[in-house]
Image 1 (cartoon, rainbow, N blue to C red):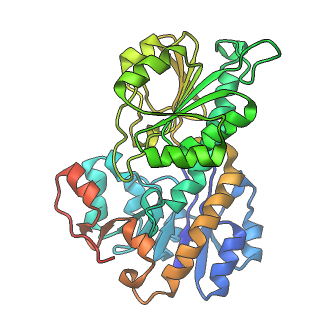
Image 2 (image 1 turned 180 degrees about the vertical axis):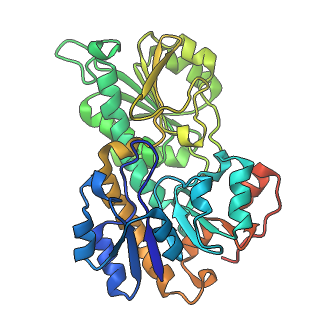
Image 3 (image 1 turned 90 degrees about the vertical axis):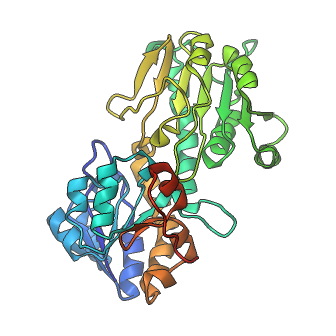
Amino acid sequence: MDIGIVKEVRSLEQRVPLSPGAASGLVAAGHTVYVQSGAGEACRFTDEDYRDRGATVVFSAEEAYGRAQLVMRVSPPSIEELQLMTPGGMLLSFLHLAMVSPRYLDVLLERKITAIGCEIIRDNDSGLPVLASVSEIAGSLAVQLGSQLLQSDQGGRGILIDGAPGVAPANVLVIGAGSAGTAAARRALNTGARVLLLDKDIRKLRQAEYLLGSSLVTGVASAHSLADWVRSVDLLIGAVLVPGGRAPVVVTEQMVQSMPKRSVIIDLSIDQGGCVATSRPTTLASPTFEAHGVIHCCVTNITSSVARTSSFALSHALFPYVQALGAAKSFAEGPGDLLRGTYTHDGAIVNETLAQLTGRPAKPLAK
């Protein structure tokens, strides 16, 4: 199989989906890996690193797209980039197609691209192993960043997250007990904050409490309980997930208005639309804005700020799937996890959630 790694063009997107070491494993298995020159530079993977591991370095995106049967990306390609792909080719990326324009979906279908969303690759236990690899990093980063934004010099409330002798620590509210939320709760607890973790699923709360210990406070999320809890929160981390769909808005504008002034919201659900009514996408270059006196940080690719760590994590998660796909006789005989993570194939929508959201027919793949 011919595999293409193209240089990310999104502003401050510094991650790469395949490390030089993973590329060498695919080359050893008989595959050809084309890497656009400079694709890994931001996370300190040089062209020489890839060449030394057997990959072929090419000098334009057009060549990488044109030669590849499978294109691997981190951020979703633009419509113009999609049109560089070979018709009938495969695309593996974080796509979040519930958030794209109808025209974007039309191009995928017209070109019969098999679009695999890293965010919906699902294992037999309904886990999301690729998404989890970056969500855990995002959850940890949310606490690190939130701690900085609470500082007086950053415009925050002037609170040290773990407090001081005789001074109470910060109140941290985490909404969503998935991979990102649990990682955020763990990091906040380890810093010494008082942490409340909310979810609608008692089983997830029970598991989080088992993993993180009795110092974690858990609660069942509801509009009434949230309205009470947000009034005393210093740092709110939204980590609500609907695989393949839009995140529900669980924190209303009225709730934000009731939060303490100069408190902080980190909305990790922003790549699915956000779970806070006042959220809007921001960038690493301009990560924050203020609404109702509350600092918001809603960076859609937040883990790109630790590009090298994130790239290794992604590569570890993706490599076995790409290896198995390359060994399969056809896409339909490839890993079941990838089939469950596919949005479009052979000119049809195969993901039922996407079909329902867009009002288009679905033609599910056999799993």
